[in-house]
Every structure is written in C-alpha cells, then in structure tokens.
Image (cartoon, rainbow, N blue to C red; front, side, top):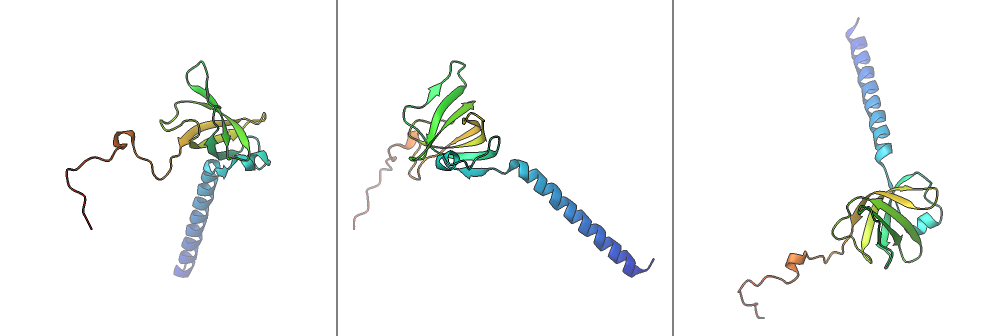
Length: 145
C-alpha cells in the first residue's frame, strides 16, 4: 500500500473517531440539559409533562407546608404574574424560606405540580452571613477627608 493511501485511511479513521466522540457527548448532554422556565412560561404551556427543566421564582408567602414525614415540603413558586405548585422530598438549603428566591430542578407532573429533584436558594447580592450581620470593629479610626 502506498504512503498516500495510508495517510488517507488514517485521516478517515481519525475523522470517524472525532465524529463518534461528538455524537456520544451530545447524547450524554441531552439527558442533562434543562431549560430554565418561569412560572409564567409554565402557566402558558411552555413546559411539557416529564420534561427536565429548572423552575425559578419566589416562594409565595404562606405557601410553605412541611409534611408529617419530615422530608417532603410543598410550596408555591411565583414570579408575581403566575404560580406553580412545587413538591420536593429532601433537605432544603438554610436560605430557603417564604418570600425568598429559589431555583428548582425537576419535572412537571400531569396534574400540574412541579416535582423537584433539587432546590437551590437564591439570595441578593447584598447577602451577609448571620455571623457577619454587623461589620467587625477593627479598632482603627475611620479616615477623615
């Protein structure tokens, strides 16, 4: 076999290998991809039953209910225009509370309830940990102008 044919075969094998790796990566990411939706989009029918997605919004005031099993919670996610009932079984983050922001990963059930697999609590950019609610005193005088 000539060297030219060997190089051509090697290039074709490399091309097939790269294409195969791309197809495998795309199929793996398809299962992990989740669209971000707001309650308004969900209410408008943008979320299909069983579709993996992220739901973002605020926990509606007075909607947080803890179930007797100690792990399951139910609440309503809202964006001010629409609301979506959410159910989650697990331990919620410390910052998760009524009137606070949240993002939930999960799927819509046929009855219109969003079943979350994971909940993330959002905080504003001015968040200060409870231990730092008051800035520490350094003992230095403030600079004067």
